[in-house]
Length: 264
Image 1: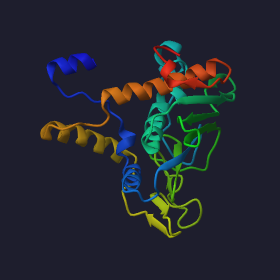
Image 2: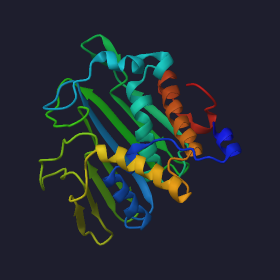
Image 3: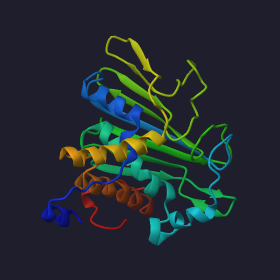
Image 4: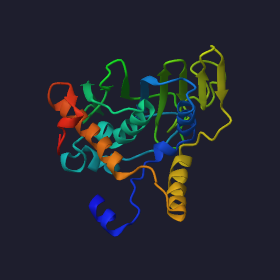
C-alpha cells in the first residue's frame, strides 16, 4: 500500500484519533515548547469496567472478532485498543522505543471468557532512564461516568524540568472531582520554577478527537501537506504492538522492536 501510494503520488495516512484529542494536543505543544524539558518518563493508566454508572452497553457479540486469534491475536486490549496507547506513548517520549516487556494477569469475563488484562507494559528507549509504562485493568464495576465506553485514562509525563498530568480521555471519570486530586479533566502542569498551571476550559470530549482527525485529513489534502499519522510511523507502532504480544507469549520476556518482522 505504501509503495502504491508513492508510485501514484496520492495521500495516504492512518486514522489515529487519539493524537487529535485536544488535551493530548495541548500537552504535546507544551513538550514541543520545552516547558518540561526532554521527556524522561511517561505513565499511562487505563481503567475498564464491565459495569459503570453510565456508558455504552456493548454486547459481547460485538467484541467477538477482538477475541479471535485470526481477527485480533485474541488481544482486545493489548493489540486493538493498545495501538492508540502505543501511538501516544511513542509521541510523548519523542524518541524511538528500543524494547518492550509485558506482564499479564488473568481476568475472566463472567468467569469464562479470558481477557488480556490486567497487563503492564514497560517501553524502554536505548537510554534506559527514558521509558514508559502502560497499566491497564478491567473491573466488574467502577463508579465511572461515560458517554462512550465504560473506560477512562490518566497520563503522567515527567520531563527534565517539569511534569504534565492529563486526567481523562475516553470517559468522564474525572469530570466532577473539581480541584481535588487527581485533578479535573484537562491538562495540569508544573514548570521548572515549581509553579502549577491548569487548563480545564478546553474541549475534553473524546468524540472531538475523531472530528479533529477527520478535519486534519481533509485540510491536509486541500493544503497539499504531510498528514499525521504517516504510514511508516504507523508500521513502527504496529511493530511495538506485535513485540508486546511476543513478550506475553514468551513468558514475559523483553523483546527488541527491531526483531519484529511479521506476526507475534
